[in-house]
Length: 171
Image (tube, rainbow, N blue to C red; front, side):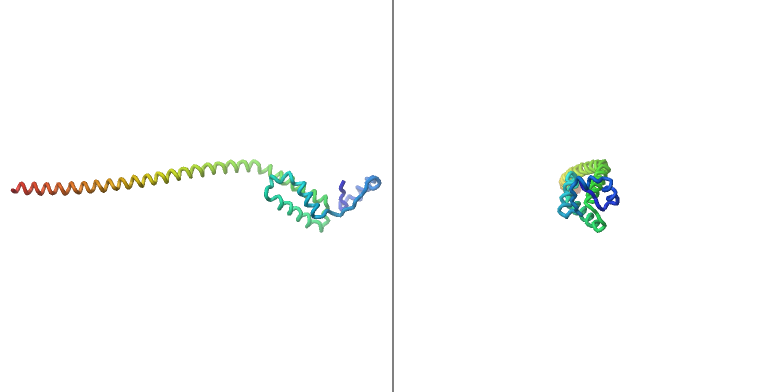
């Protein structure tokens, strides 16, 4: 059993339970050392370590700093345990509250990933079609050059024929 001697009702509680002094061994301890606080914090928050992830050690260190800053005001080991329990309750409430939001965001993220994949595929297809179009355009330009040359040659032949016809008509 752990009793907080700094509690305002400590004397009243001891007076109303005389067996604490007559039937129990009392070990007075003003506080826990840092190693004990660290061990207790890790043991109390172990079940949350998977949810917290990489920040677990940083959170433990922050809890120890918060408790250390309150020790000058008389923070006891019981206050440390209350801090740990309050952290667990707040963390669990945040996880529960954001659970639906997280699922919604994950679904949206999945849709965005699908859209990105589709855009990548369409971009690759468009690039392939652009190459094909450039190839076809080059072939069309070559054909147009050939047609132009052929028409120029026909026009030259026609002029030659007309000139020969005119010359023959004169003769």
